[in-house]
Length: 95
Image 1 (cartoon, rainbow, N blue to C red):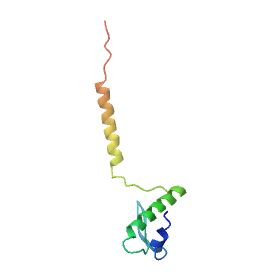
Image 2: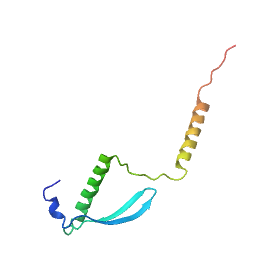
Image 3: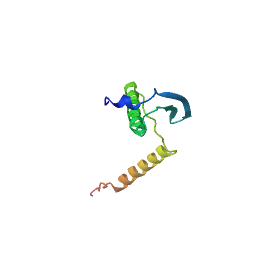
Image 4: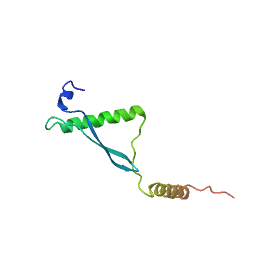
């Protein structure tokens, strides 16, 4: 972290509260007051540090799974297996 970074933040982090809860996770709304036009730099650093903290604690990021996605993958895999079986050379018995 650059030495000047704390000088960009004008007030301590304010936790406003839980904004929403879904199957993908919890959104907590917060606010950091910064110098003008420095909010993006501070925000990126904040997110980077949050990700590092989550990694240290073993907290994984959720991801969305499209409904029927796993079922579709299974169907495609079964179709592919059948295609490979059909294309395999057959043993010819000689008389």
